[in-house]
Image (tube, rainbow over all chains, first blue to last red; front, side, top):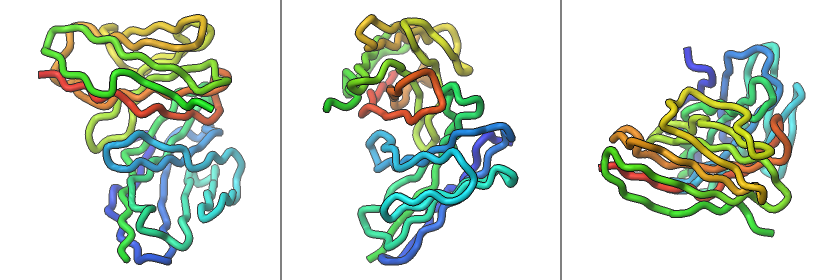
Length: 111
Length: 113
């Protein structure tokens, strides 16, 4: 079992719709969670972090964390073609900076 | 405000050679972590440097080594290169040892032939 799992996609989303990305993790004591966006051929770019159960909103992005279910998600509202990228979920299991990444979910926003 | 910088951008080496990659962290950051990203995969943690010492290490052989300088910049060295070492090598900087956001540099694309 992989430590951090994501659906590989591609997730096809019409422009203006909501994209929903899911991530599960295996280490129950994990406290720190991050979402990154990676365009093809580029390095990952931090979207947001989340540390507490519940929702955290930043612009068109909302991260949701449920530690009991070991589940973290990312919603992208009003999806734009520029949102087409691979989205990486990262978990810092012991909060010492040794991030574990999922393989990423590819999102394709169609006009 | 300068972000994370890495050099070189691209590198082609022959199997068995040695390579050194360099990273300068974001202004105000003191911790550097290195990751290897193979095509189609998420980044894999190699090691982390804080206060000029290796603080954490992932499942990478001793052929992978590093160093952090007093100005917080860092080097990643890989000896006896294998074809499987071909990947994007990413440096991430952060403030403090862990639990905090990490910001990635542009990466170094290493090709081993």
